[in-house]
Length: 238
Image 1: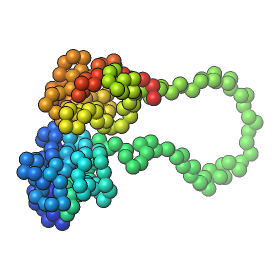
Image 2 (image 1 turned 180 degrees about the horizontal axis):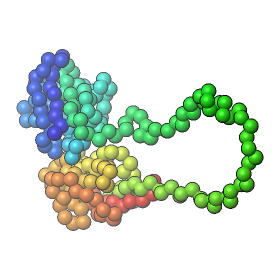
Image 3 (image 1 turned 180 degrees about the vertical axis):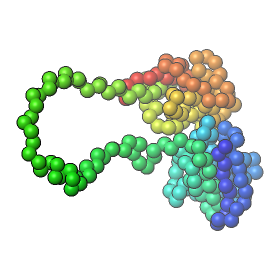
Image 4 (image 1 turned 90 degrees about the vertical axis):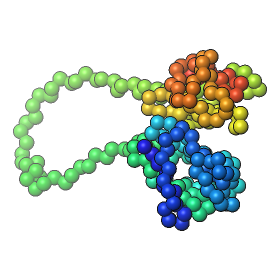
C-alpha cells in the first residue's frame, strides 16, 4: 500500500497510509492530514488514489503546492516524489506504482552494435574465395505489417451551453464536473478507461445508474452524467 512520510525540515513527524480513495491536506482540523501552520491554506490539497496510482491536486491554495521543487496544479505521483507545503514535506512511497513516462519518452530506440572483426576472422576474409554458387531463388517479397491505429477515449457533451464540445482523454487523469458541486475523474489505464467519484453529495451516473464510490469501467458509447451535464464516452483512432 502506498503511504506518505510526514516531516518538518527533514525531521520525521508521522506516516499516513493511502488507504482511502481521497485524502485532504490543510490547516483545518477536519483534514485527513492536518498541518497547523499559517503558510498552509484551510483546504490546501487533495490526493485521490485509484488502484496503485495516486493523483495530487492543489485546491487553489494561497502559497501553492510544490512537488520536487516545482509548483503544480495537478500531478500524477511517482515513487519518492517530495510534496512541500511551506517547510512541511510529504514523501510519497509506492514502489508498485506504474511509471507514467512523464518528463521523458516511453519509447527507446534499439541500437545495433557492430563489433570489430577479430584477427582470425580478418585472415579468413582475406583468403581467395571460391566461385560463387548459383543464386538461390529470390524469396517472395512480404509487405510490412500495417501499424494498428492508436485508440483513445473521448467524451462529447450532449446538453447545456457546451453541447457538442469534445474532449480527448489522452492524459493519465482527466477531471470533470463543477468544484463544490460534483467532481469526477476519468483515468486512462492499460486495461481501459475508468471513472471515479471525487467530490459531491451524489456519485456520477453512467447509463442511468450511479457508479458508487469505486472506480467504474467505461465502455464505448456509455452516457455519463456529472453535475447535470450529460456526455457520451466513445473510443476512436487518435
